[in-house]
Length: 441
Image (cartoon, helix red, strand yellow):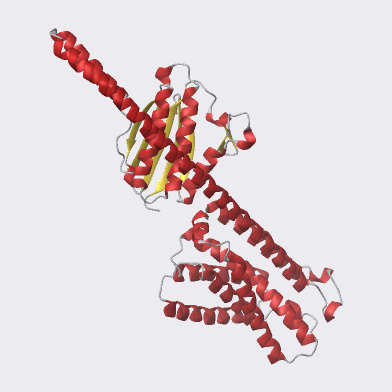
């Protein structure tokens, strides 16, 4: 009975892993009907138990690690088969399930082993261990349900997966380190010869606490981002109102001007002067043309407002945009990407002395299975892009650096949310944001 707390029954480990998987599966869209999902889950539990029991007596550390890796891969396969989650979400749920299962199996067996040492019959203790696992599954579900939402899952990117994997790998390695060095930690507490089991449980608990705090921080960031996006949307709507209001005033002015000019044209008998007059009218109409319809109403609104702002500083826009490619994107995400990108471009060109060089170019087009978005502005002779970046991110040029510089970060985060990438460069006097987003993601 001395090392009983360290030797968790493999059947209990299998039940804990299965329970954790089922708990997180409740947050995912299912691929099959519920009855079929439960049958597949039951078969997975049986297969997992057989595998872990057959490999439970392995003393070779390399093989033991290999078996743990196989168990982890089986969890990934379970989520991939049973749910319609994307790959990044499958990996995220798999890592969470593995760590939670380790903790549930460990704490359940410590309580059960203590009951055995106190003389409780084995059958009662066996039932107790299984009930403990199920109760911990319920507790974990209620702790996670306020965090894991559909919107939260959409925010999971490669960065979150790398961070989660690092935490799970470190916790698992440290929690099992005690079994390698258990001869150096003797104790007679509770009649056991070492504290490896207690160390494992403590490390797993710390890992879950850290991971839960990390999840909570992501959730808080999402709330902040949603609030910021809503404010950006409201500002965009207000700018749209001001834009239409100003446009109406401009139309009335031009209407009266045209009436007078038409009267003058009728009275003009010189053909050359009449032609010159018509050419001038055509140029004025071109200058006051704001934006063609791109196929996306939200993008039209943003472009209309930004182009109107640009006219006040004599900035010239050129747009080659297929707005229909953005139909799968949320309104707030479109506002985040194009609102921030065009605001940055306008601020940049406003600092150029020559109005003829205040140029901004926007491109949205399909490139194979991807959406290519380029937002470029003329920057002339500025420092190289390497000097303009810090840790892979664009440095803010504003004095109040603590409260600025979030524009590019917001764009990058939103692009990565859709599985895309953002690159920043400066070539031939043009500064560019280049976004590549998988079509329809």
